Image 1 (spheres, rainbow, N blue to C red):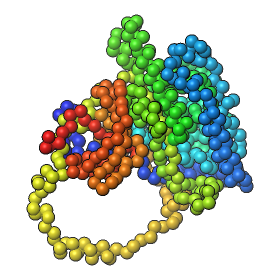
Image 2 (image 1 turned 90 degrees about the vertical axis):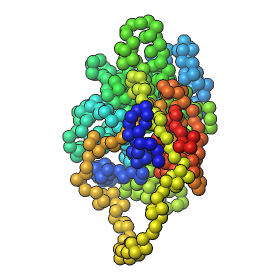
Image 3 (image 1 turned 45 degrees about the horizontal axis):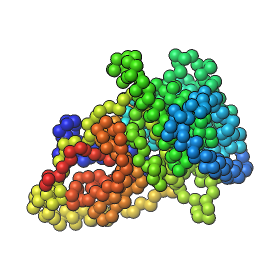
Image 4 (image 1 turned 135 degrees about the vertical axis):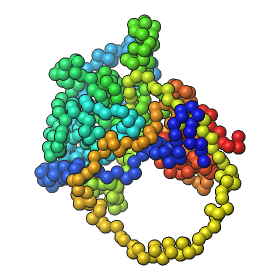
Length: 512
């Protein structure tokens, strides 16, 4: 058993609270009944007899965009990210007018209806998973003014409603497709207590109509949109503009493909480089005092990276992504096709994401600092012999009681989208926050890819910080054994892909 109080942080951690703080993954997600009913109502109003054909056509369009993006010249991408100063001398990329909407996928009425029927629940699940982690990692963060870039039919907005049901007061959406905007308005028309919503077709339109003093947003999110823009220059320009409109947190979400992960990695490198350069310039010029500089400039990563250094997966054959399983809605089961096999009742949405926050990363203590662990042998030596005595009478009574309970088969109607829930839904409000949260210091690594359980061993791939200030990181393969550390072994067995993993700089076992 680990000691309950860390010597440096004086923060109480038990094995249970340690697991609760590290838990970030969501099990099989059920799309909220309000969203399912809105989708069903919208599709019923369309009365489209060729829906399956349109869903298939939309899927082929996504594949074509992916093929076009993969054909882009890799050297240009490397120059812009690895050596931005050199590239800026060759082209004024910061002044490039964004062509978003002209070069991206054009969503007409047919594509919009197919998107709502097939893709919207999956995109919602990824956004919900990401924003839920932002809420857990930033328990005091409650956005009131939000910008949703590439809003589409409002998947990110529905996720925000579930994560922060009462905080958002004003929402600006940027969506060039009028068809998508109409669908989004139709889907939310029956919701109550909606925030003030303004729609724009481009960032240029937003900056023209909104005064400069009102352009800052607490939260800016761009989900599943950067991959539809083939031009890397336009991508960087857009992300730079989004960052300038961000007062606190910026969230980027892309499909969990090699190309989507590469986009996230490029934007990660660029924003960190840009803010570090600003910070160095401010210190050299001595424009303000050091305290003011720390508050105004700088950026750090809230999730998923535990550090702000170079991504250790950049030069490897692996790519950083995560997965969220969701129960398919009735529209997805009705219109999606499978390749010969029966369509499953769930699907796995793979995604890559990153969440930035303005300012300097806090120097929080590492969760396992000063903690002492016992080996399995030492734990067994402390057992009381009376614990091994079996009361056979109680055992027989328990078996007889279990035989009385009949086997209840699961009701198939429980999987129906509209009958399994009622409108009396408990809001996911701030009162339901976990009592123990993982801090933003470098002591919480990230489990990338599924852990492998082999007997009394658990093999994990962990991205972690290697310095106290989280300025550098590494990607390590770690083996947790029950013999050496049964406490962490139990936590490893209960961990999933995407969860956090606690670290410490002076962790010892009782034998050492």
